[in-house]
Length: 537
Image: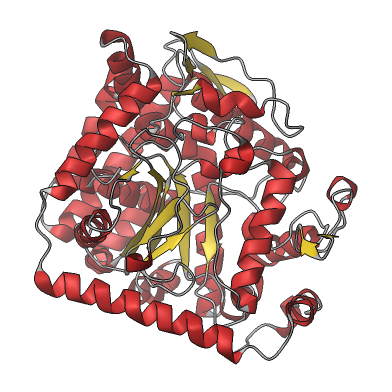
């Protein structure tokens, strides 16, 4: 890594890093004044969840998702996200946005409304896909919220870096290969992000009402008072088996050693029948229960803490976009909502993630062995469940190592990358945020998970009381925040445009939904040998 850093400095390539591109996707549940999940439809004033550029829904009708445009600064996505929140709060009436990753008071599973997207074929397909998630994994799991951080390096960085690495590959093939090297190192080291920023050590007891669901493991949570369950040294229940866990995906063995292997293994899962899912059936009295009975209905069903991405064209499958045009950016999916921050994330955290991403790119990244992938998963779960335990030991390719030693070594190396970014930006902000994280290794009470547990214990609050207090404070913050008239007009115009766009989709459909779904599922898998061959060398 040091040689790469020096080479980048020598050719002044670090200045191109000021043009890194980034965007945010942030999920938040709508809740009523009593803290229970909202049963109301997606607010019409926010537009169509199907076609709106910036405000949509995830699994549930009550799970809002805010999406920013792509920016080259770390502050602009947050400013836009703040404006989206201010606009949304103007139209939530007597509802709040939940500011914790783990959900609110949960009633019956069927009280979690599945997102609706209208009567168009594409809208119905999104709804049926979510029905499939319900039957496969239950609805409770789908109410967990987080932040996705999308980031890419600029084209002019890649063209020069391609030469620095003496690559003979076509440029886009080189870029894809480098993004997969980044992804492998991310998966090796993601536990560091979870320790430093994990913010879900506790949950309402009501969330555990689905213990009888066959995909729910037996959890060793302790109780705090009558209504709160927690892990004493836990960092992120969202990233634990309590969050996104299912037996079917545990054996998928998706490969990250190359784009070709990744696409091949993912397409195999999409086309492999799975008997337990077949037992649900596809339809019940003409009502679709899932899209198909395979291991994955579509690519998005595969859960990972990071994804290689390429913007898709209309009707294009994500794997086909990757095969045709290569990796464009990566989506980091490991970020909890920090309830102490109005947006759940701060600019300093974005800067840290930028350093982390660049560190994962520049460090050596050998191909995964099956043994190492298993060890990486074990390490992550150890940090998720016991990250704040001062005695925690990790398995470094199955060799024991104290967690704090492991984390400290990575942060020391990351400081060198942070200094490179600071040189490019002509400030010290990246180095400062890395140094600030170092203090969390010896003072775990400074982590968000530590702060949450301290607050619960010191104030003798239940998780619900704490979360409700934070939701009310956040609503007050955005309620008092002025929104520029031109921004209000822009968001109102987009809401109207999206509603009209949904109506057009519904009017222009010529196929029945059965025909539409059949055609979609009958698409041939994208073949690597047919990929786009006009990459720039």
